[in-house]
Structure formats: structure tokens, C-alpha cells
Image (tube, rainbow, N blue to C red; front, side, top):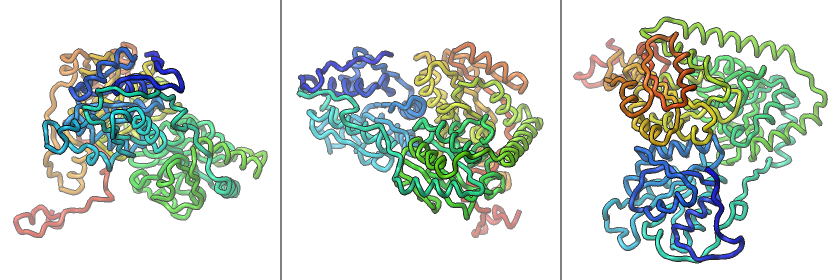
Length: 587
């Protein structure tokens, strides 16, 4: 949708209503659409959107709207906007805003609240939304007077971009009405997008350590993607012949087809990455907070090096050395810092030649891991081994495909199989770990890049939390493909009951409808797959059809991934006689 220019003459104030001032500020910010469910609280603003050239995308649940905004931002780089009715409409977004907060995703939540004449009377749909959202946003911006609606909205966008996270813009519902005089500013007049490279001293130290390293390894994360820094990071990797891993569920943070790429670390990541990283004497962590969960041992490999010198680059000073002790911390943009480090490396060690031995070592590790992945996938399943389904899916993905992944047994196993050669292609639920993320995220990603195929990898449990948005996809003509891995259970948790509770299944099993039939009843294409050999062609056909499609993939519910939280689980001990038979010592 083409951007509609603001009507204000630069540097002048004009009369307008608060709703008009808000909408014109959104137009200036390049907002092309808003997700939400209509409500009386913001009806006056809603009425302006078509004339402003802003599309209102009505979802079926506000949680989905914020997940869509999250993914849209990750793919486009433009902060998504979501809105809802005061009270329940806004509180429905708590989960998805919390997820965006942990994902460092700029987003603005327009939060109409109770009208000023009735605040504190516990009236209809009244809620202290600011208090609810304080812990899961970068800031809660309250509009204190109708004349400040545009100023406060500018503040919301400024903080969202500067601090990389969601911001709540809370406005009493009566403040949409009235008259004010104001001017609409362009973004460059109130916020700065350019980021610095970090301190000269830190960059000098980092380059010296890297130049002297015997086995440097890079971990590239979300910050590399957000800063468009892939090329700069790749240049460092090539200059040092440094193997490059990607941080947990950011498989698009370094091109997978590069000879130095070793894949993702973290749960169900790449053994090639882990076996390589544990050898490092210097780790260059670029645009990653090195989360605790994302660096836990996996496959019984305690891979994160204990004695390596860590150089960490992050735009947020709070993330520096938050989880691992560092040698050098650089507060700066991933791309800008990488460019500066590269300049210093070229001065310190001019004319570096590729380390052929290390390149061969990386290639050997990758080949071994690839062979293991295929071998695991080709084990028979009843009806389909979930790994085989992932393998067949990844084999037919076009180069430009965007994939969103949920949380759960199969979605997380996808971490081992998904490979991307372009940035902004992997949209994952990340460390908030809420189910129901992938499908609405796929919708948001498709809005950002309508030219790219978008596929959601979803377990049947998570699908139950998001299938209502198939109606949104059909209504709004958003042709995404949902690959629903149907094993009839909450299998990530079921695996805990297998390993820790002697196969006592409580709440694990799910009785599902025919998801393909449900999809067809909602106006989408619905396909049920029970043969692994059929899956690739079905996905290719779905991509070519360019229609909202749901593929119900019947997979084996007994072929399970290792427990997510082995670090936090213990074998059960029971002290009361009534429960003694449940004690692991009595099995």
C-alpha cells in the first residue's frame, strides 16, 4: 500500500482532532497497516484509517495480532502496530507482547483505556493496563492530555526503535475526541536510526585478541540480521578463517551455504556447531545476548567453552556480560562494529590467507552432521517420522522462503534441519516459548514480504491455539502455508513424562479433528498427508497455488526429541505413603 503523505506543512501547526494527529503520525512513521479487533474505544481513529491509506487487519484474537506485528517487524524492519478494545482486548495481548519483549522486537501497542471521567470506578472493561504491561514493555507511555497525543506517540516509536522492544501507548478513550493545534514531524526530527560502532579502545582490544587467536569462532545473532550486518560478519569470518555459528533459533544470521558456516547452537541445534565451538580460544559473539537457554549443553555435549576469551557486541549495554564473563564488551551496532573490527584486523595482520586445514575440519564436521540428520530422518515412523517430514519440507523450500516455527517437539527439532542463505527468513518463537506463535507470525511475515513463500511449522497443540486465524488468512487473502505436525499429543511435555514419570501421561494426549477438513470449511485449502513421499510435492503445489493452505501431516507420536528443560527437571520423590508408588526409587 502506498504511503499517504501527511498534510502538514513542515514547521507549521494546524488544527486537527486528536485522532487525526495520531493517524498522521502513524503515516509519517511509514505504518501501512494495524492489526487488532475493532472496538468502540478507538472507533473515531478507526474511521480515519482507509482515507489515510492504512489497512486495518481484523484478527480473531488480539494475541495473534501482536504476534503478526512481531514477525512483520522482524522481516521488514518497520515497527508493527497493534490495537484493541480497552480492558480485555488489550490484556489479550499480554502473551504476545511478552514474547516480542524477549525477542527484542520494536512494536507499538495502541492501548485505549477507560475514559478520564470514569477512571477508578471499576467500570465496564476498565483495567490498569499500564501496570499490567510495565514488566513486558520497554516503556509505558501515558497520554496525559489530548494536546499531547502526537508527542506521546512519537515518544513510543522513539523508545521502541532505540531500545528494541514493544512500547505501550496508553490513551484514555475520550482523548481521541476534541481539537488541538500541532505539527506532524518526520521521524528524523525526533529519533535517530543510525547506531555507533562502539568505543575505539574496545574495538582495538577486540581486534588484537582476534588477530592473536589460535582458534576463533563467531556466534552471529539477531543483531547481525537487524543491522543488515551479514556481509560485514562474513568478511571477518573469511579473513580469520573463523567458523561461524548462529545463535539459538536465528538460523538466518549467517549464510548456511558458506564454507565456514557450522549451524545453530542451542536446543536441537547443530552438532557441527557445538563440536566446533568447544574448541574456541576466542569467541566473537555478534548481536547476541548469549542467552542461558540458548547456550545450554545439548546432545550431552557441554559445548560452550569455559576458558575462551569472549568478545561480545550488543546494542543494549544490559546484555553485555549478562550471562557469560567477557574479555571485551562493545556497545554498538553489529554491522558498524564488525566493519571497524575488520579494518583493524587488516592493519594488524595484512594479507591473511585462508586456513585450509580449518576449512577441511569444518567441512568434515558438517558432513558428519548432515549424514546423521538424514540417517535419523530415514528411520521408519508410524505413519511418518517427524524428522523425515522436516527433511522433506526443507528439501523443497525455495531460496527466498520464510519459515516461522512454533514451540514444541517438532518445531524445536526443526532447529537442526532449517538452513537459510538470506537474512530475515527464520521467524521463531524464541525464549519466551509460547505456543500459538508460528501461524500468526507467518501472516505478519507474508504481509511484510508478499513476494516470498511463507511456511509455518506448527505442532497440533499449538495449532489448536492459532487455527482460528485461518479465517483471517482467507478474509485478508494472506496466502501462507501451515504445516501442522499432528502427533495427537503435547509431545514436548509428554517426553518429560516418558523420561521422568515412568510413562504416566496426564494431560498429554489431544483428540484432534481432521485439520484439513476444518481448513476447507474455513475457505482455505486443506490437505492431509500420511506418506512422507507425498509431502514434498504437496508443499511445492501449495506454494505454487498461492492460497491459504493447511497441510495436516500425520506423524509418529512416539518419536520424541529430548526434554527441553533437562537442566530444570528432577526424578520424582514422594514422601506420603499414598504416593509412594510414584517415587522413582520404587519403579
